[in-house]
Amino acid sequence: MRKLWTKLIGLYTLLFLLPAKAMAAGGGGAETIVIVADTRRFKGWEAWWTDLYNESHLWFAVVTVVTIPIVGMIMGMTADFIMSRVGIDLKHRELAEH
View 1 (cartoon, one colour):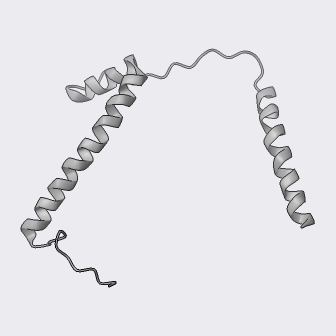
View 2 (view 1 turned 30 degrees about the vertical axis):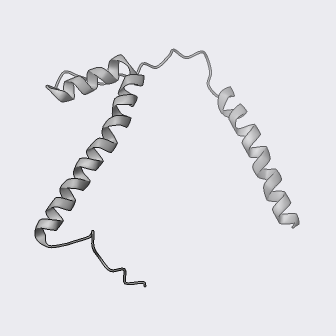
View 3 (view 1 turned 180 degrees about the vertical axis):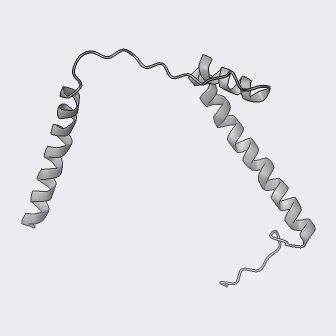
């Protein structure tokens, strides 16, 4: 039990002292970082996507969150169609565990 308390106190101390040490090691004030994507080599939808990222990170996130489930559904339906054409039927299968 004593080893557990020693580890917990050590972890507690680490969690509160390490961030202060990291902030103190910075030196002088820093300028803000601007994160942009290079759009010079993109055309079409890729250029639109990178422009959207550069203009508004919020709209980029919203479009990404909406796009991912739609693309996943399209890929899943395509895989179901291909498997049914090949002869794999996952809709009417018997469970082996029962």
